[in-house]
Image 1: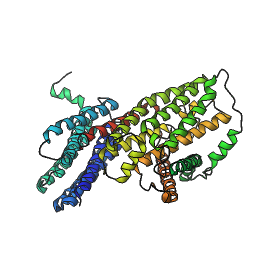
Image 2: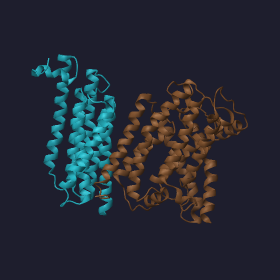
Image 3: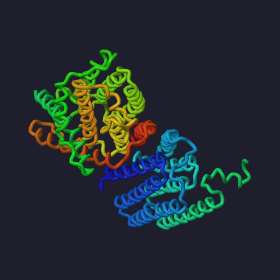
Image 4: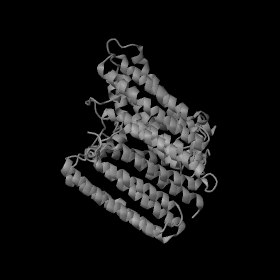
Amino acid sequence: MSGSLAYDVAHLIGGGVLLASFLLLYQRRVAALIGVLAVQGALVALAAAWQGVVRGEAHLFATALIAFAAKGVLVPLLLQRIVARLALDRAVETALPVGASLAAGVALVALSVLVMLPATAGSAGALARVDMVLALSVLLLGVLMMATRRTAIPQVVGLIAVENGLLLGAVGIAGLPLLLELSIAALVLVLVLVAGVFALLMRTRLDSLDVTLLGRHRGEGG
Amino acid sequence: MAGIVAQLLHAALVVAVAPLLLGLARWLKARMLGRAGPPPWQPVLALAKLVRKRPVLAEGSSAVTRVAPYVAVVALFAAALLVPSFARGMALAPLSDLLLIGALLALARAAQVLAGLDAGTAFGGLGAAREASFAALAEPAFLVAVLVIAMLAGGTNLEAASAALQEGSLGLRVSLALVLVALVAVALAENARIPVDNPATHLELTMVHEAMILEASGRHLALWEAAAALKLLVWLSLLLALFAPFGTAGSLLGWPGAALLWAGKLALLVLALSAFENAIAKMRVFRVPEFLGAALLLALVGAVLLFVSGVLA
């Protein structure tokens, strides 16, 4: 495997994950949001599998398999069932207009470039740097997603996008132990279950998934 | 000498292929929906019929209505001459600058917007206003995309960029992938295709392109139809020249094969366009600026990522 092509394909898959992050910010319907999340999960799995091919490490294939099963299939299915079961509103409610959050997303990509340039100046080459910038961008866009959406399901989607960014960064680094990956995948599944129960409770107690309503129960605001 | 011959052949191909491409798109869309559809050469027949008819001018329309269709067609034909099709080293290749092509497209659009406003009808003005407001986002998106390509290929000359991309020395680039998405979005908007505009109807209150040429008739309508066909060809060839330049011939012997390959690639693109248009719905007019804004931002992300991938750093 020649070095340049291996890096190019890895970057292209990473670019696909970043594109999916922007699509998450752009989407206004919850069903489509979950679909894009599934695609992003599958792309992250593909990135892990590609690293496995390039480095010839078997455990990366296991990582890819787990990532695909958990984030490409199980988590989206679970989220879809929650949405269907609770008969939730099908539109995404935003705290910041979509256009503005997209612009903020571009600013965050620029920020991760600015952070990564000095951080990797001496040691790593330009090629590894792109990996790190893409992963950090995906992570920050996930955080942005959580910050700018009002209801619980899109916020959970944002959290999983953050985790996708982490995994994208992790597979780019040689020698991530399999155990760590297993525990992260398990954590995400548990997290979605908790989010489901949380949404269910909010639905029954408050009759809404708008998380700003929770402020009252913390003793904030009116 | 070969350059001039190639340029003339290219011009002939452009004239022949442009209306067929539009007809092929309509025919494929109809076939996919289970309708028989008009044959792919229908636009040629329609053009031949319309050219022979005298235009009926709206009361109070000025010289703009009479001149604008010629300006649009000439500008778009000039743009079509500059986008390479099957051969390298055409006579006009040194002029085939991406910024010049963008300016010619903008000139055609300006003519169309003025023609829409000139008759003073409500629909024309509405379409013109929408076209201009979409252009305010589509043009920056195109320019940022050009900027990224220029930074990668070392110049805004389309032929040189296409050759550099064909050679493959640039490799696969994340920035190029993002620029491709942005350019496809801009191309959909520029050609008034679904999801931005519906090219098949006069009945919608949300129409843009058809609203501007609602007053046109006879020869003028033929020119506007020709302009639409040329614009589709320019955009599809532009996408092919940048993102699928393989098979473009450098020497005389390769021309026939390369021309066939070019036609095949165009047909594939039209097939993809038809499938895409049938699969999705038109978006609300108020969403279009968001759609084009997203295209602009994606191109911008492509530019930002160039700073890490070692091109500029």
